[in-house]
Length: 170
Image 1 (cartoon, rainbow, N blue to C red):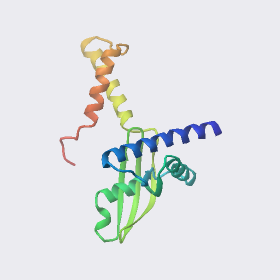
Image 2 (image 1 turned 30 degrees about the vertical axis):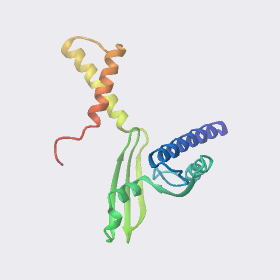
Image 3 (image 1 turned 45 degrees about the horizontal axis):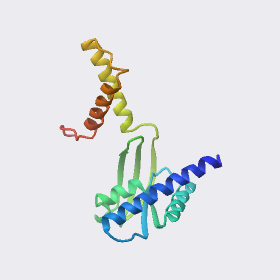
């Protein structure tokens, strides 16, 4: 277990260093302080490990905030000055999270969070690919399930289509 923790910490440090370098390159100056977002379901140990990784990478992690809170702030919901509850859906590449936030005078509190750490955009891409592999076999009597080149093209198109906004309205 300790070996796994060490590996995760090393990867986190590398990620923090890369983000620091990217920020410094973009800004054209040194970066010392950082606010880091983490999934709302992270426990205290995971949050502390994230903070430690930032410190090892040369960052002063000023604050750790939940990703749903960051999303609400990014949309300016902290500026409206009224008390409200906010529902945030976070559909990532490999996870799907839902959080309920309470906001009062610009202060956010995560009231509840839940999700599926094994459901996300990649899962939709795989389902879409499976659908088209079966459709091609049915309509054209051609099995491309072992054709790496065809599957590569199909994967690229599946990923691209899932990143396009829907044309309908809600």
